[in-house]
Image (cartoon, rainbow, N blue to C red; front, side, top):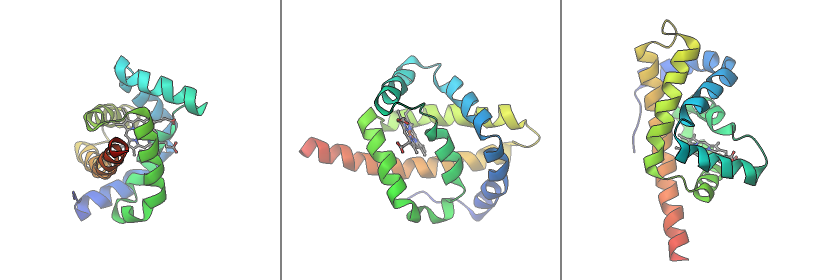
Length: 149
Ligand code: HEM
């Protein structure tokens, strides 16, 4: 399992309030970038129809959970719910780089490079991939269970 350094954790925790304060702007910028890919956009169109809501929780969750990277084992029920939605909407490991590639530039776009320095983006990238790895592993199990019937 991937782990992050205590330095990375410190950076993520220190910058989490700024990211959350600008959460709506970052989320909006992230989805604009993500939906440049029509295949990915279609996954969310379907999800929005199913849930009847704007699928805005994904980015908010990344911002909210990343600061808990030192106690992710406590996120059990929340992870289960993400895995369920991801399996329902067909999220696969190959989709994860698209979200990272949308989120990190969105953080820089909104906070500016004085706040979102290279070190800050690198730390958030590490936090993102640690979360992603947990989800990818749980989703692989869920897809296997579904295939086994
Ligand atoms: C570390 C990365 C990710 C995190 C933390 C995350 C988190 C979440 C959360 C919290 C939800 C809402 C679950 C609920 O209904 O309560 C969600 C839903 C969803 N996610 Fe992810 N996600 C991640 C990566 C991805 C990726 C890579 C994709 C595909 C491009 C994706 C596509 C979706 C879709 C389509 C939904 C359903 C939207 C909705 O109904 O609200 N997610 N995700």
